[in-house]
Image (cartoon, rainbow, N blue to C red):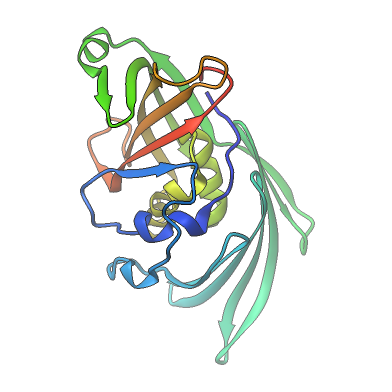
Length: 246
């Protein structure tokens, strides 16, 4: 199911960070949504973004009375190096620099300052059969003819991870641009949620070329294993090209 995705944070941030929106977030591997509106961030979130580019996220937040600033340097589609600062006497002081390497179900976390390294299993995924859903889910959409493929259930765990590293982990599940899940990643980070649960339906476009078909994933995010408590936003829809079926 998991596949590597192109990091396109900046292209989708303004769309994705409308955290209070009830409509699903749509993302495609194109540059059609090339705009940024940081003022669209939900005021209820404690996280405040200072800078957003394809290569870097800079944001501040408060935890246990302390003020922090993180600089997430996005090295590639699976690696983030985070500089972590805490405010002391009005100035931010570097207290750790951490490298996150996400590879399928595992995340390797290495501190360049303490030398500590740990491995975390982050993804637990299984496929289920839902005949009733399959019968009613095939649909036509402007330019597409979607055929239901399968449904996935799973969870992703986080510990000591930053927004960008959480986004990479979620992006591997969604199958589309990582920018499509930055809103969800920000919500999970801000609320200090350690595990997110998801239900994902996947589709294949019957109008697309057989050698490089187009797929769609519709992923619903929850904060409990019963999948009754929703995140904000709740639904991420990604359309992407692939040479193989997920």
